[in-house]
Amino acid sequence: MDRARRLVKLSSDTRDLVERRAQGSCEYCRFPQSASILPHHVDHIIGRQHRGSDDVDNLCLCCIRCNLKKGPNIASIDSETSKIVALYHPRRQSWREHFAVGADGSIRGVTAEGRATVQLLDMNEEGRIRLRTLLLRRGWRP
Image (cartoon, rainbow, N blue to C red; front, top):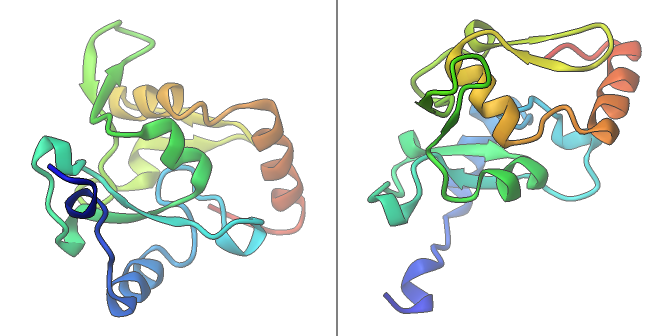
């Protein structure tokens, strides 16, 4: 597949729909686009290399950090069971059922999918925890 075919230009209507649906926050770590220096990306939940489509049901808003960490991955290792599990899927699963945010700004996976996603996306990197703590103090709620 040539490079032009791999790079998909989404319409502004599609990007607007994805941003509105996500309420301007990364659909993995919930980091708000308004607090980010760089614009969030529109991510293929299931990558095109895994036959994921460009349909809006396969797209989510994703901060650059989560997008780079996730890459084309669709699964990872659950830290509790050491089993391979699918990553959290923003279109099919509820964020609050899979994750919890602590007062210290850390994100905890409460299901196998949540734990695998937290680990793969390195959601509790020190700098991210500091930023989330500041946001929590200012009234932000994921």
